[in-house]
Structure formats: structure tokens, C-alpha cells
Image (tube, rainbow, N blue to C red; front, side):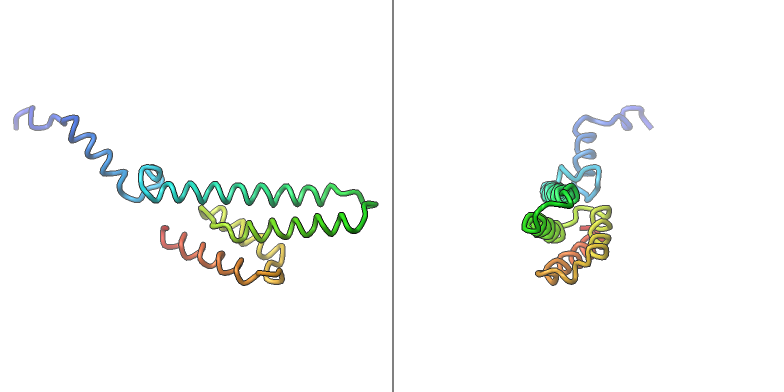
Length: 132
């Protein structure tokens, strides 16, 4: 075999690299159309998680002598943030795990709008289980 037959051209190398990124892969996710959807999901999840944590911190830092109205308002804000978080698509298995923990720990099934929260949780599990 001649040595020239094994030289890789620049075009062939670029084709191989970009062809590999066309396949579903965590390393090349941003190079595909699904990558932008995944980035949006991660952003929505991060914002909802941050809002829930802020609401939970505000409620926890409330003085014991604070008026009941304020306590009630902060608890309502925390529950609303929890519902938004539960309804945000989980971008990965770590987020899904956290959502399941919250569903159990916060007794999400008793919240107003629980059916919608649990439907999103079910859809997250199916989507992530099947690689989407």
C-alpha cells in the first residue's frame, strides 16, 4: 500500500468531526437542534430551582414573632415556586431525582394543581428514560 492512501484530507477530517456531532451525544448536544432545546430546559430549570430556594430561604429566615399574614404570604410564595419548579421540565437525571425527592418530601400530591405537577414528572421520567 502506498503511503499516500492513508493520508487524511482536511475535508475528510472535518466531515468525520461534524458527522459525529450530528449523532445524539452529550458532548455534541449544542451542535444539534436538540441542544438548544436542552439548553432552554436547563435554563428554565435553573431559574425555577433558584426561585424555589429563595422562597424557602425567605420563609425560613422569618422571625418567630412575625405577623401571621407575612408568614402566610411567604408560604404561599414558596408553594407557588414549588409548583413552578415541579412543572419545569427536568433537563437531566439529577434534576429528575431532585423533583422526585421534592414530590415526596413536600407532599406535592396534596397541592392545588398536583395533577399537572405529577404529569410533568411522569413525562420527565419517560423522556429521560428513552434518551430524549
